[in-house]
Image 1 (cartoon, rainbow, N blue to C red):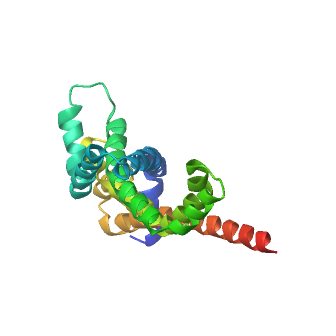
Image 2 (image 1 turned 180 degrees about the horizontal axis):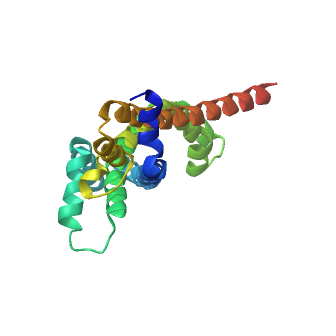
Image 3 (image 1 turned 60 degrees about the horizontal axis):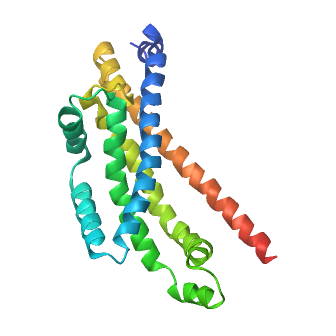
Length: 227
């Protein structure tokens, strides 16, 4: 069988491309919602950990240790087959909850480390000039935090997309599960898996491109501000 025939069998026959697109949509949807909620929750957990309360620090530290140290697949299965087993929540929703919790722990530590790495002298200077605590954070600390976190946050997003490949364990038809199904149906595992890897690689480069454009726009603004 020629390569053209194999590709037709994998991608076209039986409207396979539509199934692949549906699986891709599930992967992207879970990734985007998990990233959004996980980032917001992570920022909140970071705030608790950096608060003056010893109790809140302890709670947030335990939260981060447990979720960062637990395999996301085990967390997903615990929520799906245990915590929400008798609930009416859809599998996709439970997956988003699981990945949001996992991502939030990583984001919380990333933000905390980034805030600690900023120049505190600039904040003190801003406060001396009459800036409120919130204004000093928004205008001085936050821009530095964003710049510091960008490379690691980009890797976190790519890792999240890769981690979603396990959602098939809770009956979600994502991209990986679709690729596995097509591989079994066509008896062409090698080519089918390569196609799946290329799609995931494409998603990673889309993320990379978004961050590259963001960096370019930021650099252009900085140059214009100087000139």
